[in-house]
Length: 251
Image (cartoon, rainbow, N blue to C red):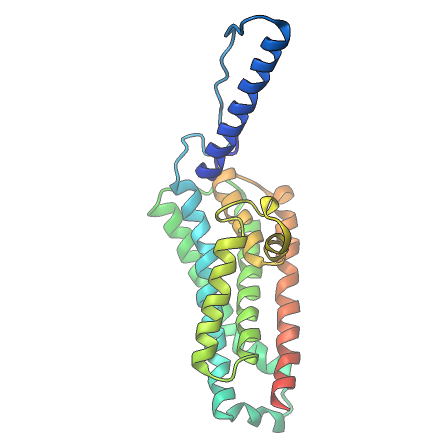
């Protein structure tokens, strides 16, 4: 059983035990004999063998915090200039739309990454969850993740006309999908229809698996490589869309 997330592990344990008992009863009825208990299955958890919820929740919370706060801060850095009209000034300079947005984005990438280091330290020191896996893919994945989340904030800012609208839209549009569709409550693979599509196209889904995998499961490069490759795609794509949206909004 995968005990990295206790609620899921306990649910799987119950289903497996029920299926095994039903199978035994069917065999006994078909044989016309009474089922004798000759063995008893003792389930073992592959990860998080002590079955502690903190081992799942502490590494999962950075996925929510690192998409909401950096995205809101980045959106607020662009939205006021669009609301006041001062963003028009950059059109008379040699600065391109992409350079303007990246210049707004870089400081918040640094701030968000410092927050990740702080959250990782708190997970280890305060909550007592050791980092069992390789720290290098986790560090690279966190950098790619904050690049994606700040790019998401830029995209929301280019689609809203005021600072207040950008703040509320970014906060809601970042937290709700992360909680509902990223695998925090249930695996993305168990979702259906549009929910699974959103989960597969949401950066938090990959960072959540990466962070919990590095901390609780002790995963390394081979297991975390798909998450890193997926996260590497979000930042450039969202930034490019934000640059195109900024031009469409202003002209």
